[in-house]
Image 1 (tube, helix red, strand yellow):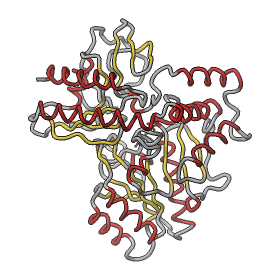
Image 2 (image 1 turned 180 degrees about the horizontal axis):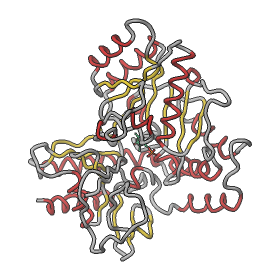
Image 3 (image 1 turned 120 degrees about the vertical axis):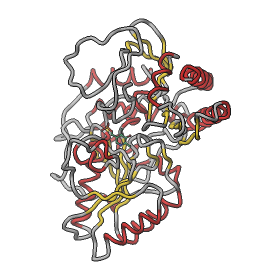
Image 4 (image 1 turned 30 degrees about the vertical axis):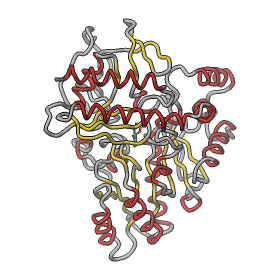
Length: 421
Ligand SMILES: *Cc1c(COP(=O)(O)O)cnc(C)c1O
């Protein structure tokens, strides 16, 4: 089965046919194991394939389509923008970019924003920023960035090197140097690593960490652990950087994942949910991390009027429709429903974990069932879910999902499970 994850691991497994149509010859490179379904229409939380079958989308283009499909405001605002101007480059002022940056700064702990086009690119910017901080602020010649086991930061060479999952490195070594790994949520191991690295003077530039690990298995960060990291960063003048590419922009039920933890970073990255399905990434920094000067970093497409208009519209719609509250309520409904399923199937499931509308249903190690198999059976029940690692079924529906749709989702999860047995 294809893995429905950000990683889209092409080496994972044989292709499993889900629908009836055989796969046609393709001119595409073999980077993905695609399912044999093509969606031709979307509305809200629903997608239709060419045959007219209707699917409940509980993955939202991997946590990107925050306003669901074919959102009215996005349609109107982006059509208008297409008729005005689409791209001019960062050689000139871009009012839409200014507006989105202003909105982000007014609604977060950040003071400045850099725009790019994807999560990996936003993290690349964070990695370069870290190195500059290491050189300029801490006087380190070869700065080290601390990253967690089980993390996912992207597929470019530097971000894949920062990713704490060896399966993504295999075949692409040598990885970029300057990253050291620690176990997520493990204070003692972290302290040991930091004290060892800092024993003979400054060595560490930053910590890059997800407030909740998405692709690595929907693992929420532990508040006490993050508080310790925050304090150590202050003590050592290390930048504390969150990768909020998946959880940021409302998915946790707060605007930002760091609000769920109650611990602010010095910088954080966004992408997935920010454009409501359109390509945009961002690095946000506080005063201390505002280190880039002209010439340090750039992106041709970054912050173009179209992408920024998408981001602005997503922000406005989340506000107008009180979607943060909706995420909290629907997230709780989803969680409670999944907990009931665990009671019904105690041999299959271990636990439910997550924040808001990013939830992971964890399969027991003792079952043969994998998240992949479950996801493919779910398609037969017209439900789209993802896998986060081998044993975690990932739910990341649009933030607009209503209670009736969550009930349908839960019913389809139950039916899919019965199919798996
Ligand atoms: C998806 C993801 C990325 C990579 O984003 P791309 O837009 O695919 O480059 C990075 N970090 C996290 C936490 C993600 O979930």
